[in-house]
Amino acid sequence: MKKFVLSFLLVGSLFLSAGFLDGIEAANRQLEMESRPSQNNIVGSSFANNFCKGFERGYISGYKQANNSSMNPITPICPIQPIKGFGDPQSDYEHGYTIGYRYGIAEGTR
Image (cartoon, rainbow, N blue to C red):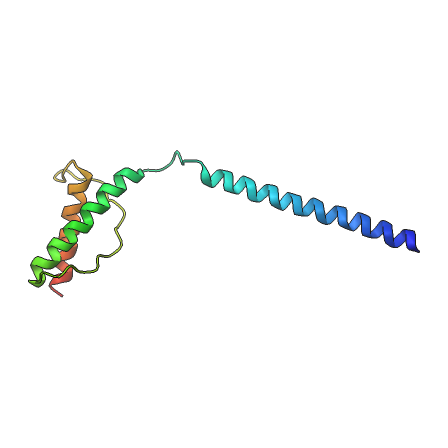
């Protein structure tokens, strides 16, 4: 009976450790995939950064002008940069500024 219990415990611990190790390997693979730069990014972080900086500045300017205030408002979260149209500026910063300005005007007149 003791041999049976010991062999059962040994086999059970092997299955548990194998499952545990599989889980660790799967987690490591997931972390490795997340740490690699994606090849499918449409908007790079530097482009989004410039767009969002422009959006923030434009929103503040538009809100102040529409609200006739000198206090800086709390800016909303930067939206995803839309695809540039025919009349849009070439610079991502200016593109963000014009969109932020429109948002700020709309919020300031509420």
